Structure formats: C-alpha cells, structure tokens
Length: 570
Image 1 (spheres, one colour):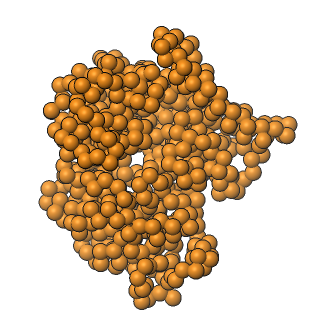
Image 2 (cartoon, one colour; image 1 turned 90 degrees about the horizontal axis):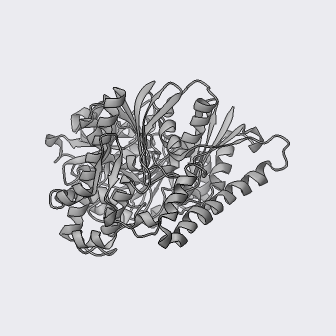
Image 3 (cartoon, rainbow, N blue to C red; image 1 turned 30 degrees about the vertical axis):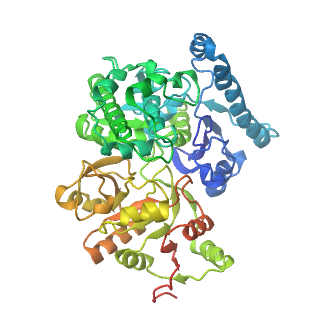
C-alpha cells in the first residue's frame, strides 16, 4: 500500500511516500524552487518522490493532506464575527487564502487522476494530529506522552496527549490566539527578524541578554493553567487580528524601541530575546508537568514548529522528568506530510507499525557518474579519490572550510552530514570566519558540533543521543577551550551525534579527523547562504561554492578546489 503525504497549506510545503508503513522518501518543495519556507503546492517534490521510489501516480492508493480546512469552522467564524473591525483581514485569511490553497490541491488531483476510473481517496488530517500522531508513530516508543506546539493549525495551537500502539489521544488543546508560537514570533519581530521564519535567530540571540530584566513583565504575559491551557495577555500583541504585525503599541511601550533590520542590537533587544526564550521554556516545562501527571509516561514526543527550539528541548530533556525525548528531524510543518501519511496508514487504516524513523536521509541522491558529468559540463578542474574521507579530514585539519555533498539529502532544517559545510572547531576564529565569509549572516550566530555517538560523553553533557541536531546541551567545562568554534557564549552547543550504522561515511570522516587532530568533532552547518534553502544538487553546490568563501568542495568521490588540488587523486 502506497500513501502520498502532502503539506502545503501554510508554509514549508513537502511531500512524502509511505509504502507498507515504511517512509521511503520525503522532499521539501523549497529545495527545488529555491524559495525558503515556500507554501506553494509541492508539484516538484511530488514528482521527485515518485521518481525516487520508482512508481507511477497510478500506484498511489491514498492521499493524505495535513490540514482539515473545515475543522472548528463554526468557532473560527464566531471569532471572526467578534472582531468585525478586522473583517477584511479575517475574510482574506479564512476564505480567500483557504480557497486558493485548496485550488492547488484540486488542480493537481484533477490533472493527475481525472482520467482514471479509480481514484485514490483524499484524507484530510487535522494539522496537530499530523504533527503529534505522525511524530509518535515515527518514534521508537510503544507508549509516550505527546506535546505539539506551533503558531496555529486550523485553530489549535497546542496538543497535549498520549500515544499507545496505533492510537493517539488528545486530552487538551489550546486555541488561537492563545499561542506560544505567536508569542515567540512577536519577540522575533521586535528583535528585527522575520517572524515565522527567523525564530532560530532569536534563540541564538537570547544568551547575550539577561532574562531577569524583563522577567516579571514577560512572566505576566504568558503562562500555563493547571489543566494545560495556554494563557496570553493579548493587549501586547496584534497577531490575533490576522495581520503581518505581531507587536502592539503596548509591547513597544513596555520593552522599548524595536530594532530595525540591519541595525545594531541594543540591550533591550538582547534582554527581550532572553526573557521570551526563558518564558517559552518555563511554559513548555509547565505543559510537560501536566503531561507527566496525566500520563505517567517515561518518554515524550515533541512536535510542531516550536519544537525546533532546541534550547527548549534541552531543558525539557534535563528537567521534565522523562527518560528521553523524540523530536523528528522535520518537526515543523514540513514534517506534517509524513505525519498525515503515517496517521492514515496506522490510525485510520489500522495497519501495524513496522519501522522507526531514525534515518533522516530520505531525499535525492547523486552518484559519482552524475556528479562527474556535472563537473565536466561546467568545465571545472577536479580530482577523484578512493578515500575521500581521508582527503577531506586532512584538509579540515589544515584549517580549510569544506562544502560536502554525499548520499541522500537529509530532511528538515538541520544539515546532518550529507548537505553540509564542515570546518575545524578547534580554531577560535572559525565561527567568525564562516559567518562573515561563507554564510553572510549575523556574527553572533553559533554553529553546531557533530561527533560520533560513542565520543559524545567526552565533550558534552547530554542524556541519550541527538541524531537530528534538535537538542542543546552544555559543553563540558574542560572542553570549552578545546572546541571554541562550536561553543556558544553561554557554554552550550546544539549537538549532532552520528551513528556509524546510519551514516558510515560521515562517521568515517569524523573518526579520521579525530585521529589527525585528537578531537573527533567537526563544526557542521547547512550547505547554503543566509536566506536560501539548503542545496539539493551538484549544480547548486557548485554555485554556492563559487559565491562564498568555501575553500574546497567535496561531492561523492570528487574534490574541487579554488587552489590547486592536493596530490593523490586520479
């Protein structure tokens, strides 16, 4: 049985295929359109999914879409009528936008299946069910508590529940505008970033501020009730009126002048980021206490766009009382295509669970033949190496910055070693150098470390593994000076642990680098520049290579340099 999962209603459009319960391919539309976080209908992603899986559209048995537009329609209409002064924006948001989005789905479905006597049924899965149930059904747990948080789905902004076997129970949800996601987006806007886009920048900025400066005020804005209800003082915000602006006048009166884009940061921007980050974490921990009391579960599954806040995840792991947490690599809206497909296969059609989603490499693959063809067509000098990991490890040990394209593309917003930029974390100036010369982004922003899972306890204080780079932990005090380029200002790091079973080539690179330097850790960041999606193809890699300060490019067995290549190739 083949199920096509689709996400396209809000942002981060994607498609996936689940075959007999196993996730075989997942692709994000932005990787092909080159428009980051695009909400366009994922035509290219669907086509590429079918090609990679080697099937035709006629082989699809079910289509699962991660939205149910009619869900809570009456309540949404009542809310709109209560805000008639904003009727125009309400109508545009609830009617025009929804119609436009569904038109893309209907058009694709008609063109793909219109001539067939038997058409696959379309299943509309509620947004948070796709987040929560999909993540649980992909997890290694037979039983778990489930927490999903985002800006909003159809109406829900949170999902508190539990999973057991094929079934997921939701015992509480909050509704728009009571939203921790929107609460945090307002801080992002205030700090001069793009809301619902740059929340990672706000998270990275927070350690430069003092959360106590505005702690009392922010603590009064957002809190969690005893039953798990999210409560937001809306007088500080304007997002509840469906506009693009998140902060109301009271927000600016309380916290000062907002930062304009490209302006220097003032103390109040640092302190607002710190206070909102701290409050988000406290609210998440309060929700976890409700979940622990209700479920008594040993494990927790976290989903939704807010679950990409890896600092929050780190605190939950340390303080919430669960043995471990699972956050899938595409935990935001991009992963709801997976969630919708798994939900239909398991929870609706009642097929048993057969796989755990521990392999994020589900995208396109380019072998040596296609890579060499691209290099030849581009008329670029290159060398081929039988042991490319050894060559790359030596170049990294010498202080070079490498672009790296290998195997199948990873899913989600984090580079997990197949579409990555690598550098030596021992060199103190490497963070500033990559931010300025390669990524072209704010100087304060940190980079993540990757290390073989068997070495993590030598450098990092973390419980369990972090295979998807979605948990922040402390760098051990004695190691902060050893790996300064991946140690943030507060002594933390967003760790990525690498299992040899899952990614043997990357594990080999880390091991050989460790043999040469005595430090089996690499600085790992996504292969892109600020504002662009992660690269997908060799041609995109070549373009990024020549438009940035990268020293070398490794694709498959091939090495391309801006200086003469080292000897040893063929």
